[in-house]
Image 1 (cartoon, rainbow, N blue to C red):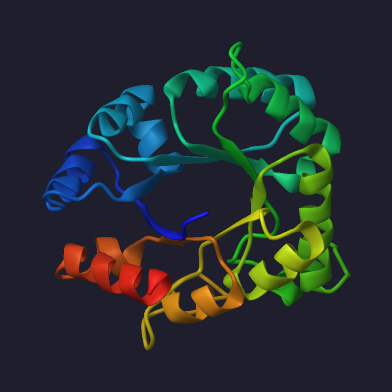
Image 2 (cartoon, rainbow, N blue to C red):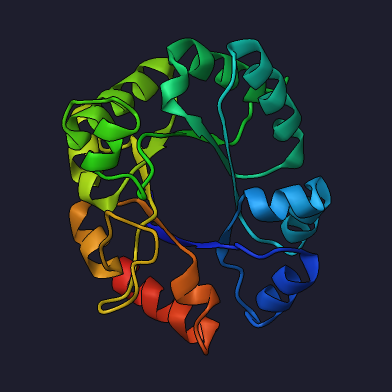
Length: 232
């Protein structure tokens, strides 16, 4: 399994997104389409970026009753994306229903991963606002175990938790890790962050990087620097 950098296309619309991708002449980076862009442009933006030859992580974080999530995943399975996600806190039953809905009649499906705790969450917020009093790392590992039990391919977690997730769930259980910044960079609203080099050392399989690339003066150079630091 090869490591890779996924660029978060956190843009408000089609024009800004495609203009950004046009700068990557001869390159087809793996990209993430999140709520902002998908809600603005709908499935058409997914199809257009896929036609350009990019792998796509569709980051919509489904979380609802099992039957509703199953139907939602059935719809997403038609978009030919490479990876989708949901919230592990939706229970094993919801994750199993999602997997069933995502699997196409021919047996193929995108990778399905579960969000454990958002990298904007720290111990204090988890305890005071979510009323979860266990240590954050323990909560993440518990959710990882639930995702593995449900048959999912991996989790979204902080790079700080990637190694432990592999120890708990196996080397082939994917860790997709946001919260990556260049050394000395602004952490923004992220709480649990590392550099690309540190994420590699900690065992991340994929790192998701948004603003350090998309807001850089030279996004292509920033992407290549990130790729070199993470992949080596």
